[in-house]
Amino acid sequence: MTTKVNGDIQATWTAFKQDQSNQELRNRLIERYFPLVRFNAERVWAKLPDGVDLNDLISAGVFGLMDAIEAFDMERGVKFETYCVPRIRGAMLDELRTMDWVPRLVRSKASKLEAARKQVEASVGRPPTDRELADKMEMSLDEFEKMKSEASAVGLVSLNKKWYETDSSKDVREVDIVEDQKGEDPTFGIQKRDVMRLVTKGLNRN
Image (cartoon, rainbow, N blue to C red; front, side, top):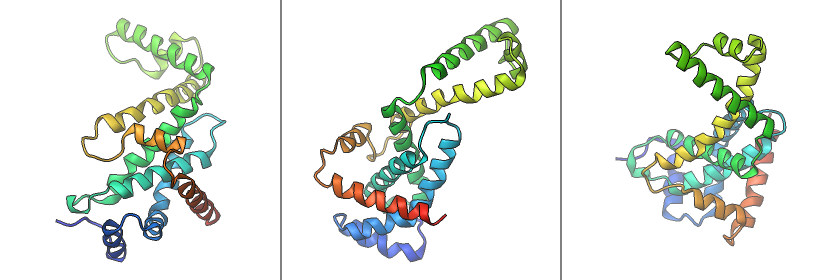
């Protein structure tokens, strides 16, 4: 069984899998799938409070894409776009955890929201509505919606661990990304320059 990729990129995939040290082929694949990185970075970024740089997410996502390209098994019959998205998002969320970007106030709001949710649920015997939670926390529904949106960012980062724990295949391990960020791989500097070139090129298209 062969992978479900478009015919125009099939030859590039085949050549790269025969020689994964070929940087030109790798970069060609990165450019081909870069829009997926941009799309997912914007979706993650939209859920975050101010202070997080979209370009940081894009850069992290490109490293996730690189990992996915190197680990992708063409014989598994899996569409690459489906295969790589969890790794792209996982790399972005891993970057957020490494940055420890979540402000203390946001963490506090998340804790208060969770405490209120448990209290109301215990009282009414079912998951509470937003209105019930807003009343419990003595705030307007608009204020509550804003607080819930900010607090959801804390849960967003916690999803990162699940990408690794629920994937039984041989691909991305959390330690691999941490090691890359430390620059222990002698090719890291070259890869980083390539990534920044691709990111800049992708941003300039818009």
